[in-house]
Length: 312
Image (cartoon, rainbow, N blue to C red; front, side, top):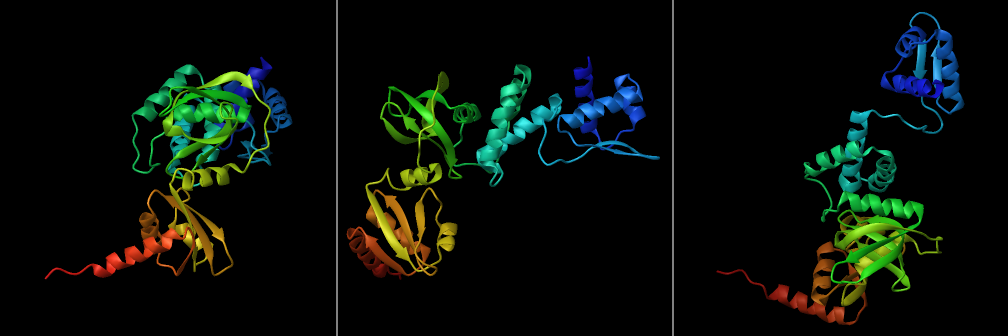
């Protein structure tokens, strides 16, 4: 069949840099003229196939303005999926979300036998670099697909017996943990969920219409830095915001610009003295904005540090 032959031609062009027409004809069992017609079919599909004449000339698959579909053999598919799983877990800086989207696409079309191979390799592999909490890659893929396809998900959450039903919007990673932001149908409000606390995650057959929603990254950051804690403090630091962001992870505090020389740090904790220690360790001139009780905690901390003596 012509379609099958065109796919075989594409696989050959992706295998090595350059082929002569005679080599391709021999591989495909057709004439040079058939090769030329099939090359034109590939070009019509958006594949930039370049042809050069003369001695040593031939056909070469070049780079285009957009990425066309790729044909992967079994070994290439396994290697790609394993690499994407590692990247989605945070081992490649800045590539987590893109790798997760690509992994969801690849997992959808991968034959079951190859999917089992990928899981076996992933299950037998450890890395020294990764998030603070290990996340099941299957949960990542299921949620990524649900976000993409706008499909409701059901799961059980740590500490609660009742099943939750959520319209997922976006996965957000802080570098140490993964979070899902979505509309909680049971709470009738936006919520964030830690993926390592989710159990029995499954996509339903119910699609939903996207709602107007807050910025996922900002929403998750506010939830993880403020909501879980008894105390939330706002302090003004004499330092550029970018400098403070280098020292304060996004899951620990939110840094707001306040002019070029100053910024505002918002952070939470169950104890005020823990906030005082954290701010003191940053080493910048500090103005406490709120709560007022943090000033007393800072004075107590200073007194305790002053009272420390060196044993004779």
